[in-house]
Length: 266
View (cartoon, rainbow, N blue to C red):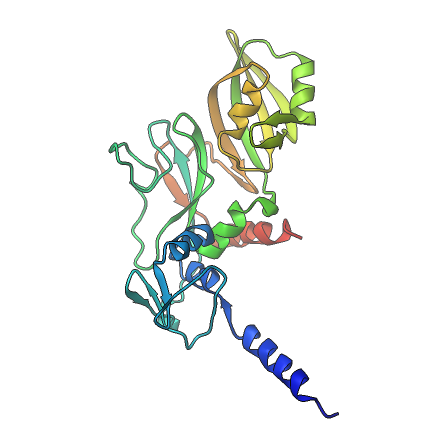
């Protein structure tokens, strides 16, 4: 069958697109940062492709020259690395940022050194919260795990001050209006073991909005005075992992959480 010129040009364009990838995906796959971070770098003009300042969404091939902050980014077989994931038990004294202007300790302070790329934080916690956070050297994986469309469950142990009636629990499961939209817990379970005027609950949600657990309880006039993240997807906080310590997930566990990041989007 004879193809007309226009159809041939379309096929050629489709072939070129199949051989290219978005620049933020390429840089994230090299472990330079999460896609969201890299998109910010691109918007700030820090990424140059073939001598031209890149824009978010630009596509690159293996033949294109990429520079970040003036440094050439090479993409050779030598740069291929295995995906690594760390599980870290955040203590109350640390903040979830790479550098703090006030000099406070951060969750990055005691991580092992990476020869290539850098650790990317997955699952922030505020300074007054403790428990499980993850780190990975794979920017694409970090992006999947943090993206709202993945809907990965987060589970927390929460100590609430004061008596909580059934009407409050129903509203928190049905949904309440917060300043950034509707929110709800997928489940709430009383843990027992009351401590004076405090009661412990296990709550589950599938979002990672800033201080969402605390804000949900506060919307009902309740105060959270202890918050511990105990699960992220299929990964649970080990009982014997002390605050300030980390462990590296085994290959099987990395593959498991990688599948969650993909399958939950479908």
